[in-house]
Image (cartoon, rainbow, N blue to C red; front, side):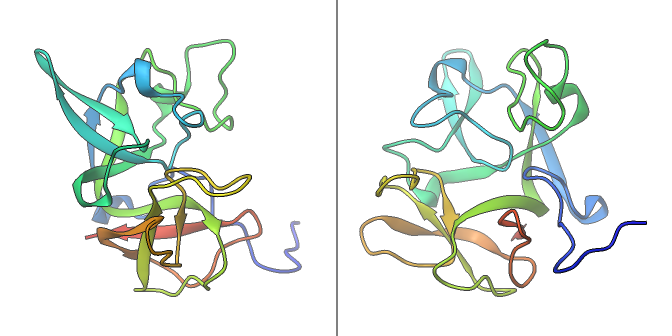
Length: 173
């Protein structure tokens, strides 16, 4: 029997927490942009880019604004298998497969900035400028830092607080 001494874990970044209330679309990630500025992980913000002949999706990087985000990179079984260096718990997508992009609903995300408590229904801020060590473009938090973070439209926190691994639920409306 498992005993939780503090708060039970809420899951893994990229999990769809309420499937009946969520919309997930499919798309390929643009491989050339995945490691800028840090390796892509599930739960990352995704932007839509109209490429030559097809629509492509990229994760947060310099030059993108919170105003034109498309959704959240979600964890789907086919997108996390098929390679010897990938595992289901690894948190890194398999680029050979179609990825799931959550455009509406409830999803788990990693919260890097815990200066402001995460409050259900509160605003979600996307970091658009890198900060000090460990503060990357694409990080989510509950704190507005003028010139460094932007309000993520259509998104609010789905629950209060985070678990011990700084994972919480985001609600995209």
